[in-house]
Image 1 (cartoon, rainbow, N blue to C red):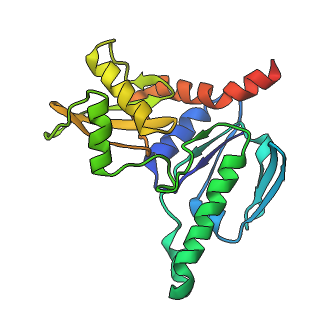
Image 2: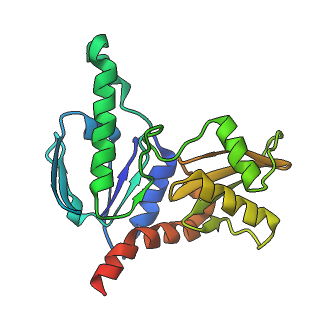
Length: 227
């Protein structure tokens, strides 16, 4: 099963879920709201050496066994604000840190691929300040732009969507995305250079070709285990 962690208002995630759930899809696809993971859920971790057995049971009775997951698409933006406002102000920062650590620990312990793994700075994956983004772009020989958005690309595990010909621009976008971190990065361009990047990929940019690549990336481990 492919699990998508996303809000019900996340249009790119809902679009991707529909595309991955088309008839004859090799595995089922399910979506869970971030609030459902954080509120009233029960996480179980059993770690023995390099192996980890994990599961999570939601308050509505749904449960996800880590061993049964083919892949996870993580779109968590932050700990849901309503949960934090119910906690006393003195304990709020501590509670938020603990919830962040719980999500990061659970996803990191899963045996399946995760797009994108939380980082200490962002629950949705790799994220950098504007200054750090400029530095990464300079290292990749990708100039910074200042005009209106002109193009958007999705880099996912070494492939760029929509496809770019093998030019200096393609090599620069690839180098930048690899330096940015994470298994999936959206790169936003102006006519004169880079505008920014985000781990919250709009999968609609790459169309069905990107959907197929997402499925292949998430199912690679399952096919290897079955071989």
